[in-house]
Image (cartoon, rainbow, N blue to C red; front, side, top):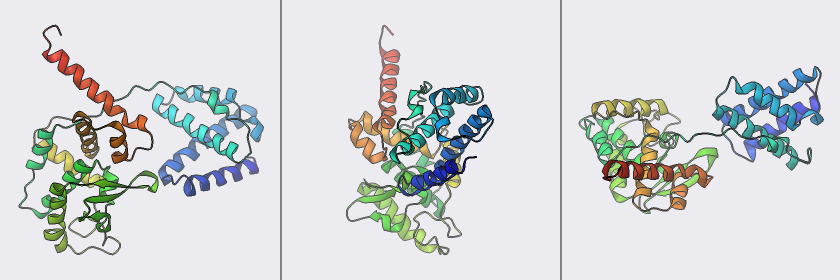
Length: 301
């Protein structure tokens, strides 16, 4: 491979790490997709390529080639990654135009996520045996995730210093290392406070885990998979026949806010969505529920 291109890719990796603050997994995916495209262009040309060999024609041929193997979602991700790479080259003055801008992104159908009703969330919590200390912790996890719309990664990484009891806020470390402040009502704050005071205080944290809020019995922070298993087990005990996960609590948080009159912009800020189009899926969910209500209750339906 052309040494200049290799150096550019290395510089691009540093750009994604330092300026875009993307996660290692996202960076790895971006670079992997770019390398697949470069190898494809090399195979087509049967030689080491230069920057002049990047063009809309071979990008389109590359996407056509992978379309037989990958879903529309994966194709869209690769196109987005290529656009980002070429945008970086323009930013650095290496290219004058983005050849990937001419490529159409596959149409994606929006999958409406599963949502729990308020009574189902109450049933989920009601299935906990609170005589066991770990279930006081599990109750606090569910209440905090639902009350604040947290991702499971944000819940497991919540630290004691991120809770502002007097002000009624928590500081959340979201995607890309970005922080946001989310208000928390006194009901949930008291549940969290009781867990920390009466359960967590009896656990000796292991080194490096002293500041994390949610610990297992061995003093280590919980894993995302552990919370997934907790939610699945509770759903079964509560007789909730929906395919739910910890993320369902986040979906339920947003949907219930929207149903009760919250504006989309406020929900976007609370969820930490960079783009409001991501938040708009909850608008589609509410419209779906309205249509279902009409179909179910209207005499002409």
